[in-house]
Length: 313
Ligand SMILES: Nc1ncnc2c1ncn2[C@@H]1O[C@H](COP(=O)(O)OP(=O)(O)O)[C@@H](O)[C@H]1O
Ligand SMILES: [Mg+2]
Image 1: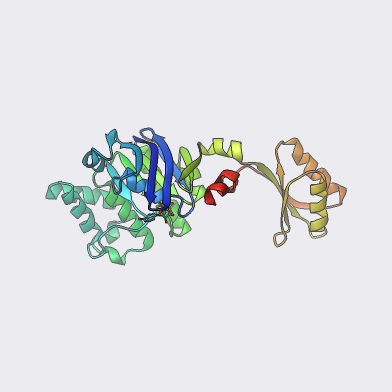
Image 2: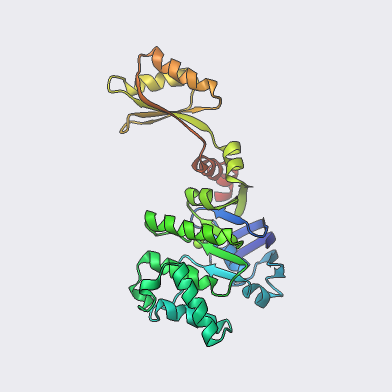
């Protein structure tokens, strides 16, 4: 449903995208993960026909974005980081307007608006101006607006940036419901937990380049690592315990405030070695937890890799 090959985009001297390839099958969710300035919005703009690539080929829903832009636009929905609804119209009014703009008759547009208002839990506020909506309601209305035309492919550019935690989770559930209905989604995010939760496939973008691509499980297995986290008892000395772990060959991290030591372990046998090293200096653990690799490790490993450093220079 989304295919991009060798996409470049330059703004004068700035190479916002430097040869990006993507391939997203129908019904899948691609998580495009990257820091601020990585090129996420630039790529979304190209995929949604808002801007033209400097080089490369792109098709969405089987249509070429350059030569068949109108075909592409009629099959996609876009929700940006900044709400695109009209503040002075009611939530209902916004959805009806979009339906009319897309060519629906009055009754059809009203029926679609009513259904979306209900689906996005906006019934109580449907007839209030959208400027009175909370951040979460605005984001839901924005998402509803992008669905008026029943898109095959939905683009969500940082859908939860700036939302509070409970609103984020509610939005995730909404996206999950859409995906279970068969919509193909490309989602950009700076948040690992978001990509981990929603995406089948994650592409990590740094400085306009794809630095890694895979399922979150694959990325974690390849680039993440397991660690043992030890909360030291009141009696134990943190630096003595750490020194013992380092002597035993572990890479460690200390959080003095939480009296916590973290040691990277690559095998389960190494967990016993951690315990032995602590025991050797009489350090008692209040709590000992094995932490599975997280996408945070992956992200750090990638964005601090020599390649990323070189590109940054
Ligand atoms: N219209 C533009 N003119 C000049 N530079 C731009 C323009 N749009 C984006 N850029 C630059 O391209 C890079 C990627 O930006 P963007 O795609 O917005 O990143 P992201 O969405 O991942 O935060 C940044 O260095 C940004 O400053
Ligand atoms: Mg952006």
